[in-house]
Amino acid sequence: VPAPAPPAEPAERRFRDIFGARSVVGALVVVGVLSLFAVALPALDDAVRKSSGFETGGVYVVSPTVSFTPADGWVIEPEGTIKGLVVTASKNGWTMKVNGALTLTPGQSVGDFAKVFRDGDKQLDGITQVGELEPFTTTSGANGVTWSSHGPTQAAQEWDVAQGSTVAQMRADGSAANLAAVQGELDAMAKSIVITAAAAGAGS
Amino acid sequence: VSAETPPSSAFSGQPTGRPSFIDLQSFVFWVVVVVVGYGFIHTYSAITGAPIMAVQPGIGWLALVLWLLYGAAFLAIVYAHQLFVRRSPLITVAALLWGGFVAVWFAAQANSAVQDIFNHWFALDFNDRWGTAIAAATNEETLKLLGLVALVLLPLAGVRTMLDGWFYGSMIGLGFQLVEDYTYTIQNSGDNADVFGFVFTRGFVGGIWSHAIYTGIAGAGVGYLVSRRDRPWLTRIGVAVGLFAVAWFFHFLWDIPLLNDWIGDSMLSKVAVFLIKGVPALVTLLIIVRIGRNHERAVWSAFVDGTIDRSIVSDAEATALLDRKGRRAARKAVAQAKGRKAGRLQKHLQYAQLRYVQSVAEEGVGSNSAAEEQARVQELRGLIAAM
Image (cartoon, rainbow over all chains, first blue to last red; front, side):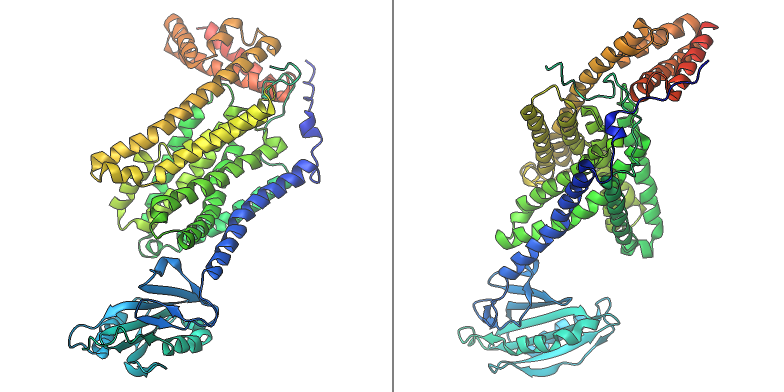
């Protein structure tokens, strides 16, 4: 019995070439579409974030009663932002939130108010040391308190300032390793918080 | 129908070559290898980094075993739906890997970016109502289908028919489904009961009409586009785009909460929603597979008539092989005449004849594989005759 003849290879298989059009163009198509999803879309997202972020040097109105001056490079995070109430922004692995919709209860001081949140820090995973409340005054003259919390990798800082019954709360969380890079900007933004006169007057 | 441009098929008359995923002469192959590896590393990191894996690794293992069993059962069902061609196991694995590691990982990046953009552009609840569904259907369906396009671009893979597109598309969808569901399970389970619950709800209640179905539908369109050279270009493109749109719509429909809100939140309502959203997708796929199979049957039959030695597959046997009913009837007739063991041997004979036809189609009548199958057919025929 003669050995079976080798099958005839179809042209499509015989003339394969790694530098042929089907190989090169095909690979470019696959890489191009993947890049669209993995590079172009995130880049567009980044551009949209920046374009809809803070205006350089401008004052950002958080709520009808609270505003502040954002530092350069902080990008608004839409997930944590509710227009007219709260704004969340991020930079260098840090996230900061300014809440302009809080008020003191009758008889409550800003220190009492802050203590509730400071006690909450003690329960947080990754936080091992919670600092004492320290007095804090904004450039516009509103008084409040601030404290810092730390852990092996995480850190947090909070500033609570009040005028009348209105409280402006600025909270920042992020990587302890990057704190130095944003510390000055966080301090400056906290200092820039303004509680408008319209809000003051309810008294506590 | 143009006689000059017959549809592309494994049964086209000339040997097409045995399909293979490994094609060192193609950049596409190397791109697929690299991105599968890239996706695997990221997916592995995400899975091993899940908090539950550090605290209760047993949950991770249980989920892995259950989802693998689920995947094996799903694969077996889809595999059994191949009537005339047994598709390459290696290409099947490549399709599963693309779906599980490439499509899942890249879609996660894209979904996150698109939803973020929607958050900037639209009202807060837009994502909940529409955005998540639009992003998922668009990104995931495109990325899954890209895997099939990559296979089409590999000359050795030989994706040539509508049913090739359906089969490998389904495998890509199944891979996607398994990795996504496994990741979801370990990220949301607190104990073993949760794992069983997720496998039931995501696997059986929601998984039967999920990614494997969507990509199967869209894949059939790509298969039609590349194979039906007897049809005008516009028709082929129209079918491919149309089936992608159908797959996109079913995916979108599954993800939007609109119907869920209207119908309510009771268990019965949830089942009703699953059925309303899922059954049309499954029925659509079954219709598409039926159309593809009818075409494959006609091409196979013509190939057998024109090429196959009738001493290996007789006219009556070829007719019986055309559908499952005929095959069962032939086995039953042999079993009634010569006993149950002969009926079982007849089943093996039918498979050997199908493999023979496929070997002749892919490697030629003089190939070693055709000779092996021919010998097997003759051996089985002798065994049955001796009973």
